Length: 336
Image: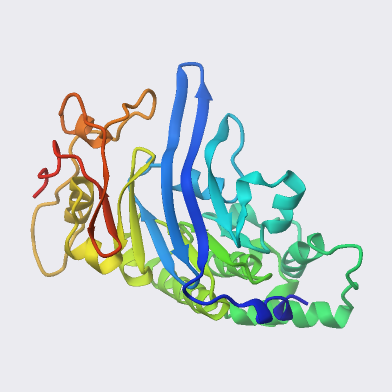
């Protein structure tokens, strides 16, 4: 049903998969407006992988929810554009956006245990999205077609067809995450947003799940945005990395370039905090506390963390090929 849908329209790798411009997500509180995502812009070509990293509270998951138009009150998308397939997702009405989810942009959630329906068999959850996107003119699937589609989706994520007759509580954590990936890729989306897809899994299962996700993404020629804390996983999986701090992107570039030659002080400190097997050294934490997102200045938020006063407004500077940073002169040498 869905496989033939996009075969003729596969995009070249040079075509943009997603283009995010000046995205803002605010939370209205009694004390004022919290700018959880504050003017984030980036683009990703078809078939490319980008990871977003940063401490908890930096705005990564809020950004992921905004890309899916799943922000809920008291949060609101306060501005910006999110172009997927030439259409601004933020300009669509609710029904149009519902049809775009899973079809053009899909989410692999952080906790598969909470995202799967505990009282529905796996086969019904795999078919649910396909049914939901059928229009009046579409021919209903026969039972044979349903069995074939479910078996194909499960096999693609290395699960036995017998899993179709099971309930979520009968599956291990890794199996549940594979089901979530099968659902997300069931309609061959153009963009996959993976919000910490391995956070609850052990190291061996993490690797297997990410290999499965990567293989499916390559087969679909989809763009993927990986939200995560694990810098090692990011280094192995992604083509590009974006570092978020206080709701803003502070550095974006090819993953090898950023890891070998980080330019923003926050990025340098993140990388220095990683343990290594080759060097025995004291753990180095990032000083201070993450910025409070209420009443943040227009200037450099990281300056406030390290005790600098009167932060400057930060220009976005191209320091190398495809490598950009928010260039604050006051804190640029910190952490060297």
